[in-house]
View 1 (cartoon, rainbow, N blue to C red):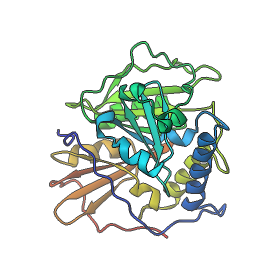
View 2: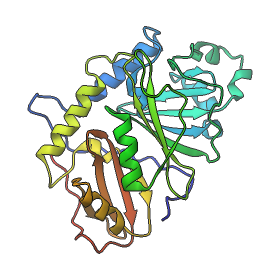
View 3: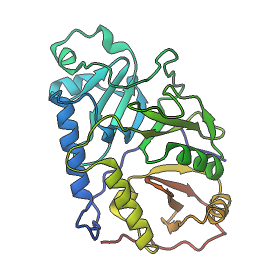
View 4: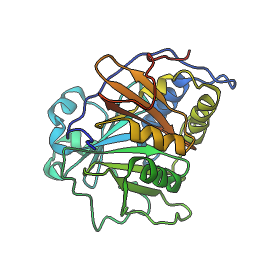
Length: 288
């Protein structure tokens, strides 16, 4: 099993959108994430649960001079830097302590109180790869953790938040992928508010879509974590054992297995391989 190399490529795709029976579509959630991030930047609140959708990098990958030149909104606290990716529901996180020595006006204005409620920072993360995690907002962190263990062969690793969850505390479960140091973090965040629409409404939107459509994907499912493996077959068998809907797409020189975590449909993965025999690949199809 091979989970790729320690790098990240970001693809920005404009795709047809699906509007739910409640007359909600992805642009509504993008607007919610945008407004919620703005409320953090104006210090109306210290954090937004939309930030729990992010990829994690070491600070060395961040060009802070460009941030300063563009006056790009940034949240920095402890060893963490966060920025919202415009026109998406996604953010980026960089980890490192170098900015503690930066006394520029930009960094002073970007420095916030630590919003990570109930977190124990005694053993702060020390990633050993540049791109080291993907984090997802979920409805049930325990279920997401157990599903990743069963389907991906992941292993549970310790997390710095109280578990089982405590009232008024962020809760999380972390796993590491096999033969890799890459981690998946699943976060329940009952502490902070979202503007316009909240995370639970978004997860219900994705769940509703998954239940209604078995022949195509929606635009958010393109917002997936791509992992590489030698064959898709063992994962297809596990998904069938779990009764999880999945898609196998023919991408030309690769095959892609795409699926969402049941009950936590904000987590969508795409496993890529040159080999599949357990299912017949079809062309990628988007619902509108």
